Length: 170
Image (tube, rainbow, N blue to C red; front, side, top):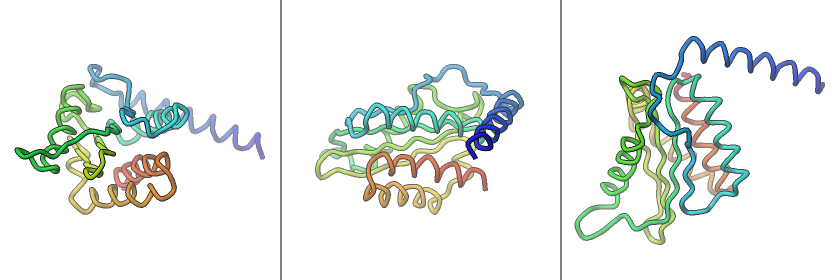
């Protein structure tokens, strides 16, 4: 059984490389990093597993997948929590030049805040992901994260990645 699994993994790897060659990334300005755990809620091994999965998926959906985890106050007397989260997510995405392709900057960023009494997530989309995602799809992704937290932080963030992948493939 192990040889069969290894053969399948090699075949899949070859298909993935062919796909990457056919649909190459055109944006060379963004950093390679995709997982930013400023709140230290993941282990280094979990972060690496998320990075690996993201690197497998991005060429298939032709969109960047970014995860930013913070523990920061967002709401103030001058800005709502929602506006602050949106501004932070959009600024982070744009400042770092994320986007799979130069023209439409296709990608998605999950900003997850752990700050006491301001916990929550914001999903920012751009390019092809923006075109594919309406409020229903955004809520599906956020629900996966929320319900995944019952099983652990890594599970919640893996669920984010997998739900984006599922929606973009359909």
